[in-house]
Image (cartoon, rainbow, N blue to C red; front, top):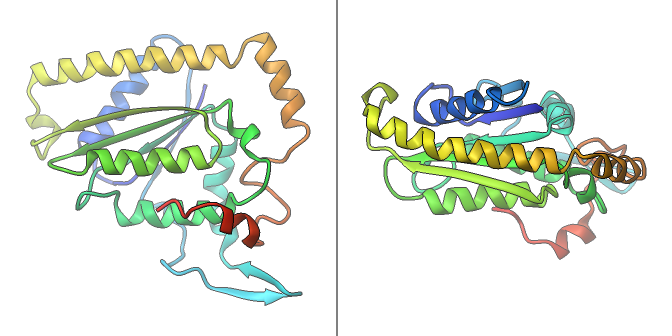
Length: 231
């Protein structure tokens, strides 16, 4: 199983350790290949605004190549994990910037079938309020990419450091994550049976990847008007 993880933190705190518990449980059953990105260290060099210019009456957005190394990994993944701690009752600014950028790169018609066999997972932790809103925002973005199977794990931690979490609480968390890992494995196996593989090959041969198109840098304003902005 190919796994891509986007951490919205460079600190190996509660969110990071919850993801590691999940990976360890997955390794008990199958071989996984993990690619990790840490924001803002791996955030592409673009600002909050999206500069553009016009060529042949088409609105072209700049800096499209800056996310190729992330989108290539997403296209080749079976499991996509968005791991984001809550900041001010919402997802962090760095995650917003990346999701906004991927939103424009994913505006294409008839692309959802390419992503439908992938599994999405949202992992979020907080020291207070905001878990429900943050996980809902992350799940909405995964759904917009065309991912049908979306799971979530959220937990409130009042401890600032993972070492301060009690052993009893860690056991309770690991028990929940173990059930989550079994669910993910069952979803993966159900989409990789012989019948599912044949259907996927037929479907994927007719379309292009959601993040790889010859005109992915051209905004489709008609499509954008019909769909609400994800944030």
